[in-house]
Length: 320
Image 1 (cartoon, helix red, strand yellow):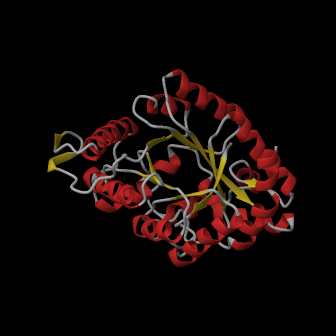
Image 2 (spheres, helix red, strand yellow):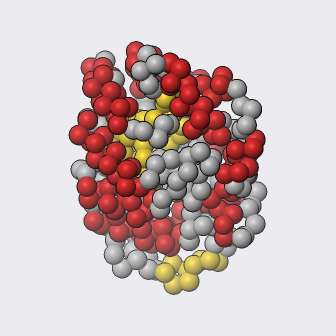
């Protein structure tokens, strides 16, 4: 049966309010949670960006939910530090934590002052980071000289079972590449044909483990309100790669998204006041074979969404 989770968007919500939201989501019937990991929001209108790793410790302690986080090791984060963070949460909360690893976006990574590499270089850097993280979680002492440098690193606190390292992808080619190293695949909502191609590419290349999907939704009792929420909060998030990878600041995203039409937002976010439509959209994703679906209501106010989907959407999906 598909697991339905709550997505914690640090770019949009103060971490204290986000902790309250995930606690409420568990009480409302959500099965799991996942977290973003940003240094910068996508827009000044979103206006937040708490540190995910501090928050994850609190959220795991405050709930009984399994959690995942989407992380980009290699520039802003040294892979040995990410291995230590993963290992510590895995040791404290066995079986409840996984990490999805991707190549990142300049909006978060440029803060180091280092050049933002080409995508092929970022892929190669991520693969080195994955190998370093796996070796450290396995108890090895690691030294490495390449796109990242590691000198005699060893984790002294490790979980008995290393948490899963999930591959993050939005393209068919990246999904196929992730099959070389990942313990599962995560992507975001897209047309079902594209999602099916990604799943097939991952599995045909030998990809193992669960399939995760993050779904952006905007719901409100009235259609105009659902559209207004999506347009205000998510119109800066509609740009396909490489634009979304390479813009550097929230101001850049706000400038390029100033004249985005609502139809473009609706191609990225499932926007509707009709709960039946949301059930239908989510059922299509279930039928594609996703093992876990994390629902991200793109508004900054989460309580009504949590209560309504917990009471009227999730039960219908579980009964289908």
